[in-house]
Image (cartoon, rainbow, N blue to C red; front, side, top):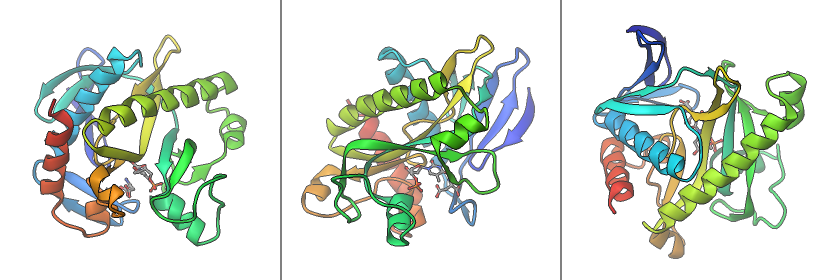
Length: 248
Ligand code: TMP
Ligand code: ASP
């Protein structure tokens, strides 16, 4: 097994049989790496949650590259060619959507109130670049013009993302957690099939809000916003959301 790459939070190894091993580290970054730290337990929380969600999604018919969890913070996945776009699904106004609205860069979707925490009726999908120094939003036209994927593949990815949202949103609602938004990635297998890849359903790649606080009018973050906005100890927040999601 040899190290082939280091992401912001994961180390990536190539196994002797050609599979990929993800090692989820305790590194945390935000704002394109401008803010960095290490928090104990973070790696094992994200590894455990990603394995959990890959299994839940596979059971509901979403093909993923997951093979097996091999230790508390490592998993084996199939080696795919990762598509150069990150896919973001939003159910509520938050994060960079709210920021871009406030600076006048964008309009909010139709029938969406202009406030942080407002529901986006029907949700919305966005795409950002993946392999550029700083991720930036891109249009579907730019994705197609760049030849990164075909129109059929883009439609397929959009439909799968909508389905993943339905599955995760409803699953989390039963635990009184609102899925405000999330980011996922896809890869292409040697046979051309597109599979869900990387990390899914973790507090690094999703915004989770406490539903009871939301009903009281408060946005209580159970995810990396705790770190981005200096709202408390990341280790404690990650262990709490992990246990809440895994509890039957
Ligand atoms: P954003 O509001 O900053 O655009 O983020 C939307 C969602 O995507 C949020 O749940 C965090 C996640 N995300 C990542 O996982 N990685 C990234 O690099 C970015 C920008 C967002
Ligand atoms: N994941 C990105 C970073 O590491 C952005 C973010 O989550 O805020 O900078």
